[in-house]
Length: 477
Ligand SMILES: [Cu+2]
Image (cartoon, rainbow, N blue to C red):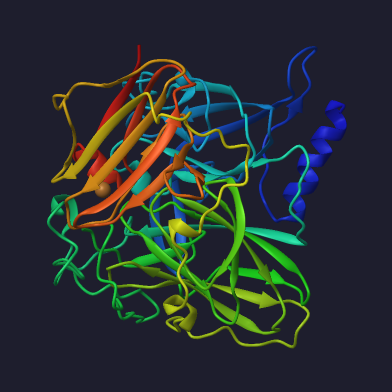
């Protein structure tokens, strides 16, 4: 493919989907095509239904620009840091070379204010991924965006697609009853943990306070005034247009720092085709539970003209987020009330046992894994059997590694492994990179092949839990 046609392809995709695609693309004399983007980290003003807030983001927008590359190509991204503190970018879901992983202090020096850093890596596999800052409270601001890796040949048939980034939001807003920087961790979130000392999650401009529902287990201890979809609050929701008869692909990303969501669309079912960007046998459900860092691709058959609520319910917390699915070819229908809860939220919920991998999954050879780590999530730590608290988890290239996680805390914790996909140790062996371990004795086991040398983090994707120490390093020998 010539550079010109490649560039026009990118522009076409970007324009057609209403997306921002940056930079240029070139085909070097040898090697895969290169897509170049520039990401400026800096202060951003956003309008939350008339409430102006100042936050941090990329290229002046929240979410940051949606990046699109093709599987097998090289992504070259220049980060310029206009923030008053150091930063890095982590490319979540990409099995990339270790030096580009964006883990400050482990794979690279933090990028100082005023400095720049060039990320450059080959993107091996297609999928719905995302990029985000990886230090301190930066992710709880607006420092994230979608990274869509398109397959060389699309095998999924659909008419249009939309990307939905879900987020919990407090930046630039007054948060009454704020438990703020001192949010407790580990023992909160269950049994009266709703609200957690924070005020009710009243959304400015909506007055919407959603019933937290029967499932009171939370992914984190903070309260947030707003739940956003593509940085839009319930009073000014993102509207996703479809036409009757469309098969619509939705790429749903949980970009929140501290909140797991339940996701459903009124009047429609969801056929899950990918988990964390990796293909699964299609399974149709009413609702998804999405931990921080997880992604699901779903197909929705648009057969019911109108304007429908896309409900984004925080698990175990007050508040409610929403967007609107609107049929563009139907008579104008008013959007549902901001706090209308799709009954589908209480319908058939996707479980990990539903996920059956369809990729060319290798499995550990007979006899099981070469090495097993037993991890316990306790308090603010990840304890590893047989290792001291600061010792890396050693692996050797080529090994099959089993990680068995037990969660003794009162929160859900989404565990994220950098640089690799892992297989859930379920009959379906689906590939993921982030998986939720249930609270209070929940257990999750996964296997992965040590095929990407370096120093990699494994951590809880609640950024506050991570900062509190719920992280370990995996070190290749
Ligand atoms: Cu956690």
